[in-house]
Image (cartoon, rainbow, N blue to C red):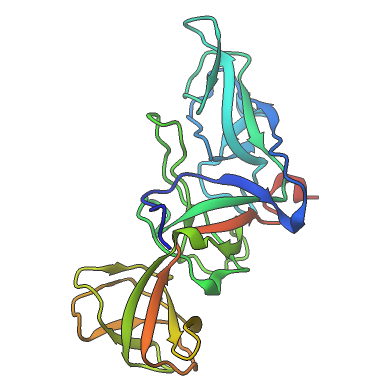
Length: 279
């Protein structure tokens, strides 16, 4: 596990649809207003403007999408007549203040789309975090960082420690196993409490909130989730006795443990957050 390495958030990438529906990758074009003043990056959620010259046009969701800031989908590039060359231009992102009257945004607007996205430690940073198995099926919030004009890509993700907030923009469907990072440790103490002490970790290693604790079952060689996940980040200071703050669990814990970080998830835009799912 742990390949490829996820070192930064990259926006929201459509991968399929819920319920086993056929996914054609189809999109819809929406207009962007002449001289709209904010850049929109590949993978950013977008909304329908509601004021001034932007009424009826696509604008970026400058705060995380939620039940009061609803989206029509995710931006996947645009086209417009370049005001300098007078030629048709296809762009990975929309550059702010483009002086064109024919700007068309490509938007993935199917409300049943499943998106792959990175997990960050806080809304305004690009530091990669972890989503716990305990978060599958609950709501999480998006982040707020601005994308890159160099690549044209979004830098948005979801915040790993946002919890089950009713108004949050995304529902977690699952963790991405391909990029999970595993670290072995040895159980010392802490069964059934909110503090778990382990040994065998590397000094200086950082374990983010949302790192899950699994036990290696000696009889089968399989991993069993203990129900515990880190509720506070930890920087390892001792290889022999490292305390971790975790969710309480009544599972029997002993022997070899495996700490699993999940830096990517699969999620969909929540009901009542997507414009097509609002009465």
